[in-house]
Length: 407
Image (cartoon, rainbow, N blue to C red; front, side, top):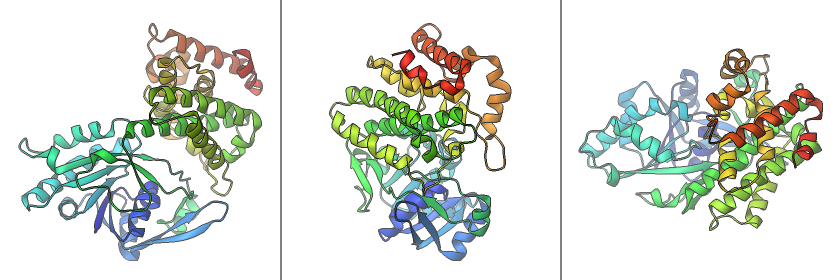
């Protein structure tokens, strides 16, 4: 059995490759980084360092790689695969479609059966986006619906950045938390759910994608942003969530989304299982051994402040179900003030643009053009975020008073 995995990055190696190798699959990574491809082919294995209460090192074996630019070899691997996965990041998906389509055509011409593609990208409506991208490179007579299963997934694994020194020592090593599950759309498979420990099928995948985005990702981001405005020298997520004011604000923000999700998906979520999910996340954020940084979790403001992402998307869902969204708005206000830097003292490239070109244009511009909020129809959301933002600007050291002031 063979899985072809586009993307040998953190999630590709620590989760996709790890789970399928453990289940006995050969793992063939497709990647663009020369050094990574070379190292995978030389060693045929790599280390996953699991950081938890009891840390351990796991060797992932039976792996190799093909360079993404070698179109003929990649299409051959796709044609002979038993299952395919992508974990390249949503912005890199356009670079996958053409070569993947070539492989699907070759596969069909060879008389091989249907294939399932796990889309491990943590985006809403991933199958729709993926389908549109693939169809541009497939002939009109290709029987897409019978030959390709586009399987949306929910990826909850947290993988911190490693230092440049660690990267130089071992370019393939990846550090990750112990969580090792991929939630998948049970209804999307053409070839059946693979017998792989850690693959969890769900009938309503949209509910779990939204829960991941609006509770996990949102809560994680709010932790980072409040950590930064509390003390710009604060480095780690565990430091932030250990602060009682931040812990309380994050918990309340997560419950705002939690209440909205219970109303949106009453057959999936209850106060009991949502509470268990939130408490588990708080514990995972507090994982000191993992060493996840405020910089990593907070960076890329234009994306994380966009309309359909973790913060504004959560507020829109709250508003739809008449759930108050004060604490999520607090997270948005703090995000606008976030200036986290990497170990070399540099802003993330998109954050540099945000600070230099977007922030000087003012809060109204940010909320309308970056967050995508409608100045007329969503005036109540804009006004609350502005009020909270202005309160923080007046007294950033006392931001936590906002929670009481507006309730």
